[in-house]
Length: 171
Image (cartoon, rainbow, N blue to C red; front, side, top):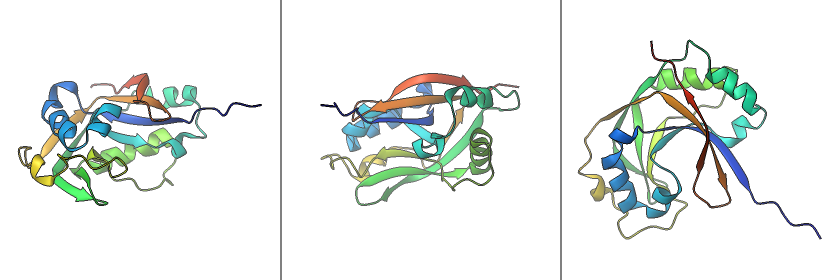
């Protein structure tokens, strides 16, 4: 008898800096406590399927490149997507984000991915606090500088854990 292995997922994410995340995390806890428990506010840089053919050693080499600098992304007001999902869509800095993705993935021929911060994920059950009106206290525009990329992993439906951190060099 074989015991099936537990599903393991990996991705590269950029966490909203802790000092800047207080308001966001309070809103995320209200609108989607499940997502809030699984992972802090973040922007996904590269998804599991994109990383499948790249070793952790090669990822580390690419992310250690001295020309990589922190990136600043600006996000607009919260909006609803896919039923009861809520996100902050990037409104400035997408070019830097795409350039970083291209460098990490080693190609310009990659799928388009719009940077965003998920406040509530539609795959989770809709919480009683899941309402766009509960995001009204957030500023119209949010700006965050990301100076670190994290390789994170998730086993089944457990919270994501940081496996390795990669500091983007400051000039």
